[in-house]
Length: 113
Length: 112
Image (cartoon, rainbow over all chains, first blue to last red; front, side, top):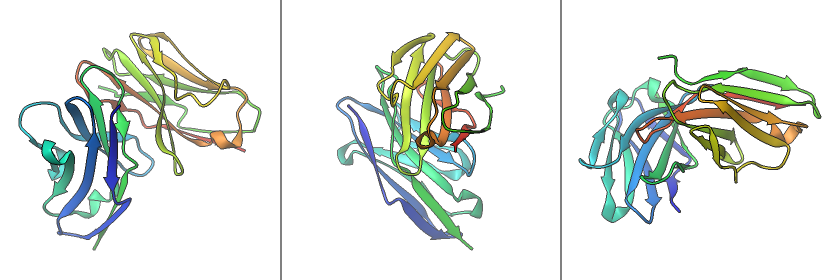
C-alpha cells in the first residue's frame, strides 16, 4: 500500500521568499503524485500532478514540483511567495491500477507581509 | 463545467437525527469518492464507487453510515442516527479517465 509523509505541519515564509513544502512517499509500484491546495472553507484544488515523463512538473499559480525516485520525494516549490498563497497544501499518492489515493496530513502555509 | 456539486453546504442537526448529504459528480466521470475531514484525523476516505458500484467501503466508520449511487450523476451519504462525533466537513470527489480527483466544496456538518 502507498503512503505519504509531509514534513512540517506548519510553514511560515515572508512575502517574496522561497516556498518549499516537503513530501515523501512510499509505494511498491511507480507512483502517481499530486499536490492539492485548500483555501479556507473550500474544497481541494489540484495544483499539479506527476504520472510519467518529465520529472519536473509545473502547476498553477507558479508552483512546481520535482519527482525524485532515489529520494522518494515530491517537494513543492515556488520561487516567490505571495500573500494569496496562504492555504493548506496536501500531497497525495496513488497507483496506476487502482483508485486508492492517499493524502498526507497537510502543511499549512502562512505568508508574512 | 460546473464541477462537483454538493448540498447542503452547511447542516446543523441534533443528535439522533438522520442526515443526508448529496453529491453530483462531474459529467462523464466514472469514479466517485466520499471523504471526511476533521482537525484530529485529517482527510479520510470513507467509500468510493466505480461505475456506480461501491468498491471499497472499509473507511466507513460504522453501520450508522451508508452511501448509495443510484445513477452516474447522483450519490448520497447518509448518517442515521447522527452523533456529535460525526461533526466534520464531508467532501465528495469524482474522477474520470485521468488520475486526479476533483473535489466539491464540501458540506460542513455540525451535530449538537
